[in-house]
Length: 95
Image (cartoon, rainbow, N blue to C red; front, side, top):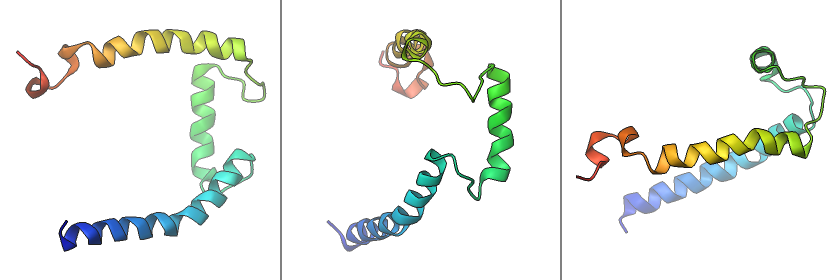
C-alpha cells in the first residue's frame, strides 16, 4: 500500500475518534428527548412530517401496528430494488 493510502486511513481514523464523543452526547440527548442545538431548526420540520403523515407523536406504536406498516414495505421494496433492471442505469444492465 502506498503512503497516500496509509495517510488516508490515518486521517479517517482520527476523524472518527474526534467525532465519537460529541456525536455520542448529541445522540444521548436526542434519544432522551432533550433539547439539542438543532432543535429550533429540525423540530418544525419534524412536526410538519408528522402532520402530513397523520402521526400522533404522543402515542406509542404497538408491535402489531408496526408489523402491519412494515409488511407492504418489506414485500414491495426488494423486487423494485434487486430484480428490476429497468431502474438500473443503462451501463449496468447486462444484455
